[in-house]
Image 1 (cartoon, rainbow, N blue to C red):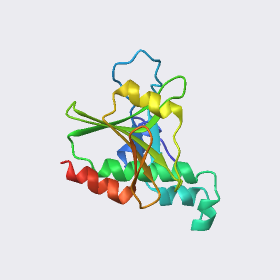
Image 2 (spheres, rainbow, N blue to C red):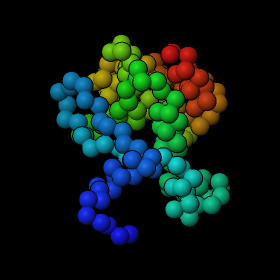
Image 3 (cartoon, rainbow, N blue to C red):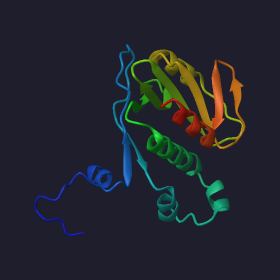
Image 4 (cartoon, helix red, strand yellow):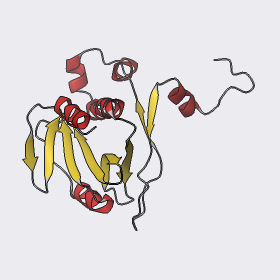
Length: 172
């Protein structure tokens, strides 16, 4: 690549401008815990990600270590593309690894903690529940690769991606 004077050198911003990557900023609410402040970066096109990693079949993807991260990126991209401007999105991670994949906030009233799991039998760490307390989550949701909807302990609801997107659309 020929870089001319004045060409943006921050590749992340350039890739964002070309809609190749998406940056999700860290949650910035008030907490006494030390938070990770680095944005999460997702490749927006999971097909491109798979091609770059030489993953050419669904079976190969399922056996590849990137399958969970690929699913998370796919889910986050679909959710963020479906939100209206009344929502803000971030992620939460503390220095002791308490984490929420996606925090959705609306009108300072709704705070949704979204965890993305590729498994059809998802489980949550204690760190997720701790993080939900830190942000004052009003809804706790696991978006998973299945289609059924069911509750988990700790007032968490497990829901498939398609149904979750319908649920978000109905809140507009």
